[in-house]
Image 1 (tube, rainbow, N blue to C red):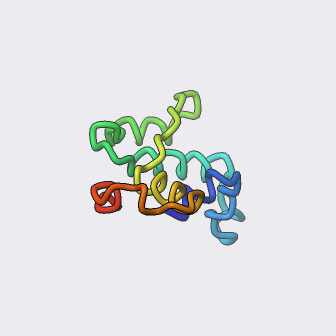
Image 2: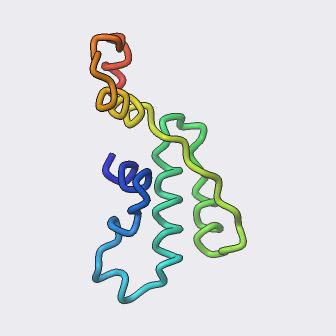
Length: 96
């Protein structure tokens, strides 16, 4: 969830360890994070194939789609922004 929070806040760079930044391309690190977020989407059918992941890491010309926000993250944001938590159904809470 931290990765999604940082991404939403425009702070994806905070996910990259300073020791890694020194030895790799920032573009490559951000691309890895982006692909990682695609790989943990709620819908397993939306996960990229490993062959696509490898090709995408090897070729910067491959366009990477935007990952969908996980349901649990969306529910957490809802709870944080709404004063009436009881408006959520029990089923929604079980998903998280």
